[in-house]
Amino acid sequence: MANTWVLVINCGSSSIKLDVLDPSSGERAKRGGRTLSGKVERVGKPGCRFALGEHAVELDSADHAAALARVLPEFLEGIEVAAVGHRVVHGGARFNRAVRIDEAVETQIDELSKLAPLHNPPNLAGIRAARSLLPSLPHVAVFDTAFHSTLPTRAKEYALPAKLREEHGIRRYGFHGPSHRWVATTAAAHLKSDLRDLRLITCHLGNGASVCAVEYGRSIDTSMGMTPLEGLVMGTRSGDVDPGVLLELLRQGTSVDELDDLLNRQSGLAGLSGVGNDLRDIEARAAEGDEACRLALQVFTHRLRKYIGAYAAVLGGVDAIVFTGGIGENSALIRHRTLQRLEFLGARLDEDKNRDAKLSAEAPVAEIHEAHSRTHLLVVATDEARAIAQDAAHLAKLDDQVERGLSIPIAISARHIHLTDEAVEALFGEGHQLTPRKELSQPGQYACEETLTVVGPKGQLDRVRVLGPTRGKNQVEVARTDEFKLGVDAPVRDSGDTKDSPGVTLIGPKGSLTLESGLICARRHIHMTPADAERFGVKNKDVVEVAIDSEGRDLVFGDVLIRVSDKYHLEMHIDTDEGNAAEITPGMGAAMLPDNETFQDGMLIPTKGTARLRLRSTRFD
Ligand code: AMP
Image 1: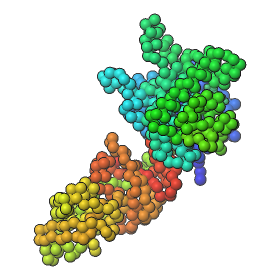
Image 2 (image 1 turned 120 degrees about the vertical axis):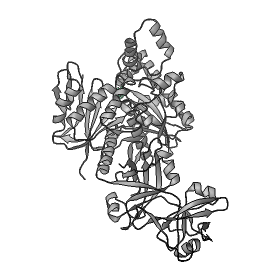
Image 3 (image 1 turned 180 degrees about the vertical axis):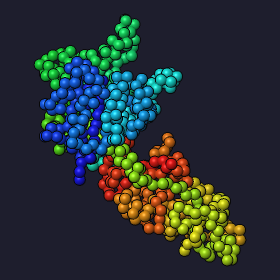
Image 4 (image 1 turned 90 degrees about the vertical axis):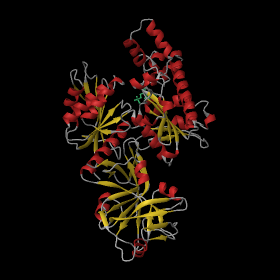
């Protein structure tokens, strides 16, 4: 199969990273034997240059737009790119998943600059430049914060006055989302478990560092807060500091800019060690007896161990602790020191495995726990570019499917009754014929003028509509709420399968009829023609998943039956309870996601079966 290349752009304040890769395989594009992974350094400053392997281009103080304009055409020459993924650091409360970029999204990213003044402006500069250079491609924003949008309120809020929190968006957002998500997913695959069954602590330890408590696939706490300054000791960032220290420094006359510089660029490993932020240097000096470097290692690992213990408590137990990032993937010493005294969590490090752990493209996961360790200890290679590329490809494909009409309207079926000819006569009088009132979407089906009262042991439902034409069996389809009212527990069944279902009494204008069986709660299903089934890659009786993206009430429906017949018309049928639960409004529909992949919090995860498809809703105009 041909590769689908995605360009990933990561614009920092003074750098631009460019990658071209296939999101499905992770393969990086190459040209002339050179991997298309390049970096512009010193953006906007003298000495600005683009480096692609050994190849370098001088860019004379170019800003983000000028640098991309100079670099991109040559970088992408001969490569057909399907989508562009942009890393955006702050998505605020607005973005809880990746989005296709348009002017409105650009404006919102701009507005969020007040929460991330160092990050969002360069991200946006890159987006604007790339969109004008590659206008025909879909551009997708992938937010660092999105994975943490699931933080519960107790983890999200600072203990500050409500007015401040509400009016200024001051709360914890978390960062490094694509990395935490990526390694959590990779760890679950390695453990041959469903992410939704695992409690993980993921430690992203790079120049920036954060730790995340991932409960059943959702981030429920993370060490970075409103900005990427909170939490762990980082390369040059302090992480947690008593805010009283900052007040004292301000009182002593330190300016805000000086404080910013102090906390963001002069602290962390660099500040503690006095030899810079490269851990390799610090480890080497510490081994030679340098006290400041030893202290740097001690403070770094103590802080991390403290967070791991705290998150084990927050999760109520932990199945695996995962290390990633430049430090997490490479420093056996940091892993060793961090995992001291964590045996009480069932985490037993195998020192040999830890020392020998080496990751590669072929082996992106290494186990470093002892054979009988209750908690798994894993080193996992992160791949943020691939996580971003997957989101971009996924959204681009989804849009493409919607554009090509591969979408499924949703219809909500209210409770209704199918009758035999005999039942019609018993209830409405001899010789009575049903009177069509309204055509239904399935060809030949119609709602009738006739209604009946349905009576159960506890209560009754009035004016339940009869559908035509008559059938060979009587059947009453209700929602769960209706069952409570009737006082009957009806099984979830495919239409027509009424065997051993409970009965009810029907009361019509000319008589009543007590059914022995026939009351069911209809199984949600999608009607389609054989041609539709082929387009969607499913067959009759497949069971799929449908993720509904509605206003504030997203919901995933499992166990959705595919029903294929050339008599059908493409439509998903759910009952009123299901429609209400997902806040489905008239005119909504579902659009198919790529075959055999599921969508979880913005990420595609291959599934085991062949028929587990997820659909995502879209609005029909
Ligand atoms: P990242 O931001 O993920 O690229 O990580 C950068 C950090 O990883 C720097 O502090 C490096 O010193 C550290 N690092 C990279 N390789 C090693 C290594 N072999 N041993 C220790 N630290 C490393």
